[in-house]
Image (cartoon, rainbow, N blue to C red; front, side, top):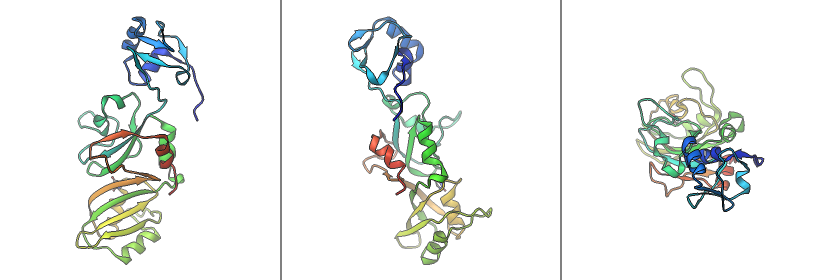
Length: 243
Ligand code: URA
């Protein structure tokens, strides 16, 4: 649990995406911001935001030290915070889920769809992404040719990528057999194009790829591609489960 910390009132409004610094100062000086029911006209007033009730133009401010968002990424968007030319996953956030410092915790390729966590909590992202934590990421994929016991065995033993990199053991399951089978693969690393390169190492191409879970956090089936929602505290903990 983060320690309570006093912060300037104007900075609190900015951190919550409620206003820019300049707007926050103007609103506070204009008496539009109340603290525990009393107008506070001093932008520099220091408060512990979790210990008081702040309202802006009568609307209570729901203070969240950090934000955690689950997104069902569609194909065609870059999984980065910003790009000078192309749209990014942050462009999908509705106004109430926008604030400074947000970034996607971990990357999916432009053509990959599915679960992305967006946050402004660097420590959380680090714990989620650290290879030492061995958080399991599950994907579903459509593959260019049949796979069976041989490929399952190679992945279970830890396949070698084209540059000689050894992968950790990965669990491969065939969900739907055929010339273009649907499979599920669980990996505990996040190398560049990892799943695609793993399948290339056994002579197959990935035709479609979707991340369906990270640790114990499963993509909410109610989220259509391109939709997102705030995560609850239990879901943040679930991400870090070794499931
Ligand atoms: N592996 C890939 O090859 N691509 C992704 O987007 C994620 C995992």
